[in-house]
Length: 340
Image (cartoon, rainbow, N blue to C red; front, top):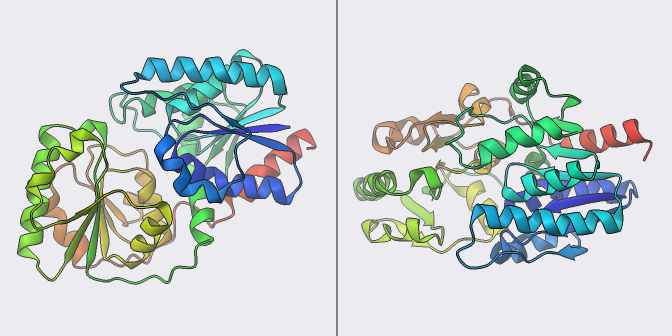
């Protein structure tokens, strides 16, 4: 039996096709939801079966140490009860690190979906960069989405590496949204590294650009974090809303002209929908999009890079994140090595 662990909306989205593939092949599994994104799980819960375990560990003003310790403690109980053959995690969250450490300490093999993404800057993204590096050292299966990720893992001496593509492309292929390039610009800004003056600077630029381009609709589904919300008053000419459901966000992404973001996964979703993206960060663990000409790393310099995306929004290159069959490749490695 396999335990599949997730705690955030992106993890559900990217593990869903792996779960579908396990179901299609009648491979026994159970699901663990840690509750790290408790308020966002309902939004994507239809993508996966109901979790067998719901840890519900979050509380107000929790710290990273509290989250890690609670998940490790609860996962230790589950592992001792279920004695799984394998634990699958995805990405770089506290759920991923805690679940992997609990598995490692119980000598249970770990499968890491989306392994090998790196900035090699432990401060950006924080704490995600450290989480990824630690899990790669203890994983039994390192499922890398791209050749660049494979190269990172080999350089670090990681073992058991397979290039699979990114599972989010599998998920996006399951949506039936026609792709178009309208007058909307999608904005998502919420990363911890941009809190404070960087966020203020970007919000001022966005408002100025929206005022300069009345023919465009700048759409900003704003993250509820107070460190983002505190600058909302600067966006008089921007269409600000609350967070969108995942399906609504993907439908919007299929319609927009291009994207301005500091998010990670949306860079891959932009590739699926062939949209250019301005990445408001100083580093990215997804350089493949930049190399493919789809993404541009701009820090906080939105205004001076705006024309790059606005004048030629449609991207026609080869998707660097795979062909939409990553989940099949992942499960193939499990069945081949373990005769599951």
